[in-house]
Image: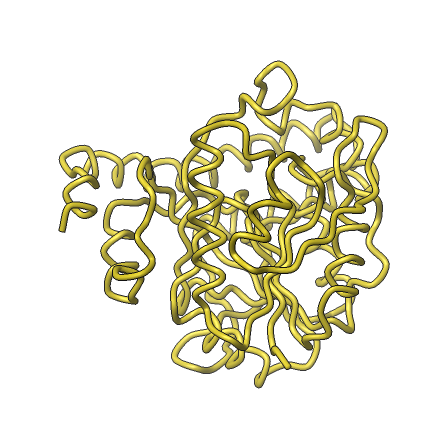
Length: 317
């Protein structure tokens, strides 16, 4: 029996670049070992064929929103039906997990009974298939991260949790804003440890555009994102990676240390109201600009360093 179920709801495999990065991601999960069950949810074009090609489980009958978007509640339910592993990992279909992923997740589970594991991602431009048959080692993954940069705390791409929790998730639309923030809010409300895995785990996000969405607009601008936020209880409940309460480092859990950006983020949450307008709203937006500017400055400095590197050299090794 497996120990970890990694599941996702991929986009259609029709766009050449989306096809490439999703295949890279799925293969990275498959190479996590026999203790991991991989489940692909939804009947978007190409998903069934890719599931068969990589010999992973396929659950096509997902429920959808009025816009035709798969629902998180249905995705979670189907993943639990497909596999009886005690640990579940929802992940976006453009994320690469390192070979050490399973070991780290088992370590986290030994430290807490009910918990939510989350973490920052490293963005990287990948335009070629990864040769998993000969290159997919921890060393190669670490080399890949040298060509990427850590994104902001609002980018949340994977969730680790025991199957006993998140059994009653609202009908959020996948791939839109709000539902990922609610996952953290819900864990905090239930007093479950929200664990930042970043000190032990780097995950890679393969950069892509948003041409697959309506009018090519970013997911934050989609109407379904606004619906998600309302389902999650409003803007005040929209938590980020900043709201992690613990970190997993060197095999143990410890309280998250404070930082200037986390301080401004906490003040923002204290003064923010549920609706726009008024003095509280004005002050909360000013506080938000402070911590966002800190994160953005760090990213821009990293991008300047990366401008002189060429990832194609790594693939030619």
